[in-house]
Image (tube, rainbow over all chains, first blue to last red; front, top):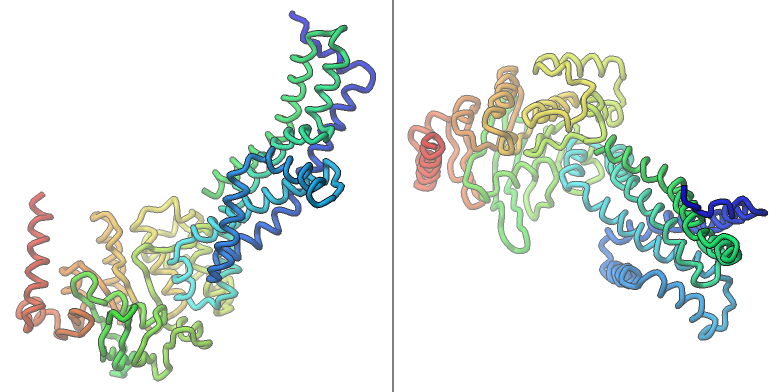
Length: 224
Length: 252
């Protein structure tokens, strides 16, 4: 069997450090998701209302965030805010801000599209049965919206977790950065470590994201 | 016979375009009225106005003296008395058949769950769908969905039933099973207003045919009179166009 260099992870506290890196990544993504989901619900709902100016503002926000690569956003907030505004943001804080901005935009769009995808006749047939507006939303519209929304938002969560691999570029020591450090430190003694360590990183990302993605697929099938 | 529904001088405009122009119509209890007319003549809109789904610019719709008014606070109450079935069935996709049937009676009318369930199962049996009670709408054929949609309306115990082209989206072989249910309802003496393009069915089920043209009632007659000897030129044209279409369908 070729030497994969996995043994470097057994040296000292390397494996623990890697897991700590994963925790940093998870913390940033979970906090951002926790803020993005409620904000996205509000933004998405507002986008289906009749206020034209609000719609335009959110549209511009959404498209801007989408067009920019996340890395550019990270640089803009982390380095830009220090120079231009004199803020002294930590890398983690800057990451949370960027991921929340991004997550809110994406979530808002998911909520908006889930709401408008409920056919007009669902509203009308509920009304025709004598439901009041409140009952109609509670028993018919919102349950259907949630069923459409949940698999999509779970996919968004996995996308956000994966994208945390970018934040090493603004100096946050997350899993990928730790992996690089371990490989660097052992370059002489264990030149093959790159393969082994990144393989473990790959497996760890998989273990974290796979349950989410399975859940999304399961819900999608169940609710079709 | 007592008058159940009264429509007076109903006018509906959409962006200055007149859709319905001063419609006067009343329906007796137990009467089956069929609205016919070429597409876009306003017959579906008329049906929607009767259920308060459309804002009207003039006139009134009254069910037993109570006004059906778009946006009115009491509208949900009156609507319980007016059952409406749509072309696209519109069952609630997140609920199974029995819950689709029971949701409105239980939540809107707060009726007893056990009795409701019994009644729902009984109704399902009358249309041969009692085995589908636990299935979801997506597992049913179009004809089955539409039959469930009709039952869902019936369970509210409405005084009048409105049918808006309920077979228009169905495959031909499923049309019959839905029309049979409606024929049965007519036999039971239900008050019904039906918009349909199934002329043979209209002839069989209707007590009265109302021909609408360009937003106005152009002709009102018994089915025999209307189909054998239409009075107006427009009605003749309409029936001609229709029979031409029928020959073509049969020919293919």
